[in-house]
Image (tube, rainbow, N blue to C red; front, side, top):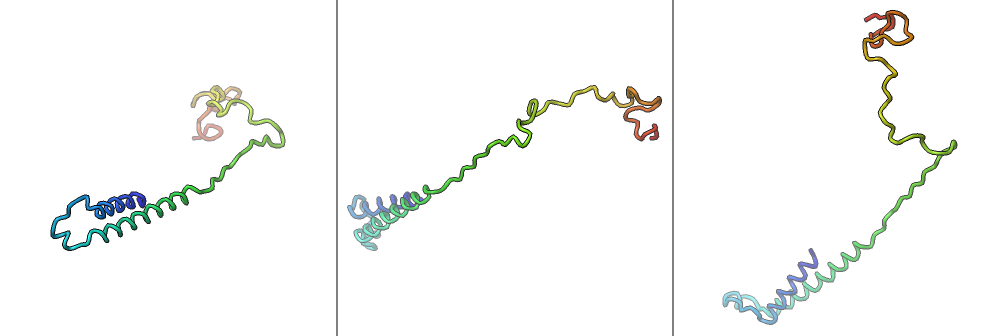
Length: 118
């Protein structure tokens, strides 16, 4: 933004200095275009220099890079099997309300409390 403002001021100052544009009579009588042109040229040049210095200052920054290394731990090796693990295998438990294999007679899986109490 500072560099853009400097360019605009510089162009306006050069236009006023060279009398490239004829000003209306009321405005030409109210201001002296040559001193105003020099003021714009100097201000534009300063704005450009400040803008360049600020942009150079912004580009000089430090970047921190973090490197991580996998430590297998005291037992060696990493996790076994696929990662992430697949869905749990089905078949360990029967559907709710079905008797479990090896369970005492009358006890059903998902029946609530031990002994069949609800």
